[in-house]
Length: 440
Image (cartoon, rainbow, N blue to C red; front, side, top):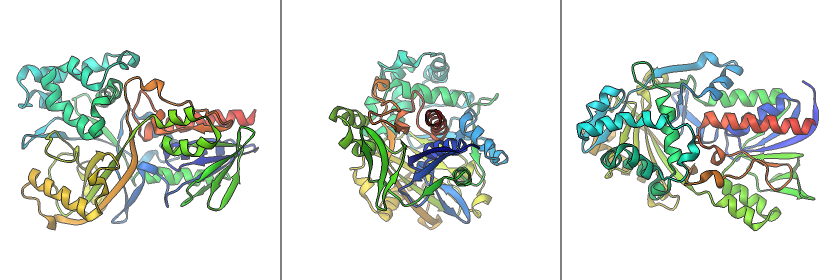
């Protein structure tokens, strides 16, 4: 590995930032990763459950998430990749329905038989769309009604959109939903069941391996080091500001949410550019993780299509990864997307847990609080960008107006949705691109 006499600051220690740092360090470029949290991982960060690492926000991969799977193998972790079929279902009108296979769809009695056929064909129709640009002028609501009709939309899709995007649901682009249908349809096995991937030891095993590789290559990863701004001279970035002072750099790659980046660049760019960065809205997430002494059901991913319930899904992780991994405990996620200003987001951990448990008992009447061995509440202020119509015109370029300052965030992943797989893809891309420029 030949050395390149350049220094790069990477703001953010999630999958995108660490992958970019890894690509740069492999090429002999000195990198410093600045992570505000006490651990790396970003939205894929983990915590300890009975000696095992578990994601704070539920995570899995699809079997066609090749970018992150290839990275795991490159890091020598291919033997930890686990592939399993999942069991999915829906809670609607006080009843549970299996929705794992095409036959399950045909038995979905909340819809008339003809609408069940339309629901089954909807994913096939969506996968025939080859050019996502043809959908940019439509909202998800408009497009889904075109494909499956009003009844299918009201029963199946509207509650999921409302649960995911809350007050922003009517603004969401058809492109966002198209990609979801395409991705999930492409991950089904020959019998029609969905095949998903998990990583033994939790996603933190990959981020730990990335940190080790970066440090082996001469880079450094600074934890609990929030960035306060950047130093710019002559239109070119030359330093990263933290509480410890200014770290000299030749270039910066910023991976946090766009409003934070806008704050750092506002003193050095036009008001119009900062306004563009802030034009993409985000929704927050609050996620309750329960450690239980018994199972709720046999379903891994239960979509909650009842508008009277506050969470979009009940994800019983240990119906995917065995309870033996977590000392015999059953792991359940209850997730709620909402504006940061929402009352639920502002609740204390105990208040939010009690609020969720009340609704959980409506769904599972036999459930008792005594089943809870431990609970954890996690929050993310910029959990999901709102992918609106004509989103491609809103996304900022990787190169900012400040020379040497590059942007690589989940809001720029399009037409795909944000996630670790595409964070790895974009991190690799910007890291390799910048390495080439600095070497030249």
